[in-house]
Length: 447
Image (cartoon, rainbow, N blue to C red):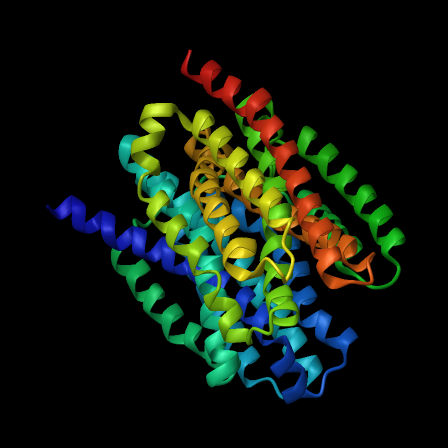
């Protein structure tokens, strides 16, 4: 009985920490109009409220993942909570553009520490069937949390103030810190030192790469800078004995497929989460709150399916479940691409969302499991960092592709149809990665 209680508290710490990160992103999605009004921001400045966070989140992810391996997961996790909680407080207190942009950048560093460290703690804590179940909940949180957060963000933006969501994170962070001290196992990490050349080259390379995607000027020079520093980073990781991202992570077929597939899948889903609420507000006259509530068909189905993932993984295998999940998500996106205001919400959006929700419920947990498959404890943090890098960079790239596609057409509905069709195309590529890399890699691992 005592073991079950320990399982519950540790899983609560992991899932609540992950949910805090997701909640903040959704508040920014739904609260942009109110934030701009309150702080007097123009469109260019407003975009940096989100971009500053993406830059530091993407830039520090590999460092955040490896730091837990070297210095101890609990200690690094607590540092991440302090940075994230303090950053949230500063965002909530922001009175002008420089303050909110700097606070969001600071908050992104906290997220970059929390996201991979929570997954690494999960890998350390659970084994066998318990690990499959814990990863299923963690993967489900990625989808359910993003959808539920849109509703919560809509409530705050419409009925209260966007600041409430950020202030909420402060007591939650304090509570998580207390639970971490009480329930997480203390570990001193590995003997060894941090790879400083790898750290700085990855930080500069990843930040430049994210900027080349989301920036609004000098994007080509930023991309060339990213290529240069990431090349230096890979060379350094090849020659050093203490790599921040061990290249052996990329020798496994299942993990490579998971990284490629997650990149493409999250690209499609992030674009979907971003442009669909706007379409519902502009084409169907929904309020910000109603646009959030309109995601319930996806959220409820996703939650129900996620509870079955552990049982179904034992039956069909991780790769088999992933193939079914991605195929269903692509089918739902293809259906959604036929939306017109004449078809309306129920058949044009809600019904396809049910199919997308089933697919998402089947996909996100197996992607997470495949991304950390066959890793030793010493590499769990680094592998978790790469999983989150693919999640973050894939989301940024996909969002840019879908938003750019939508903007090519004068009519928003036509733009939406083509953007969603592009998202379905990304999902088909993710499906190929699952069929030809993840599923065969899983069979090889078992053999």
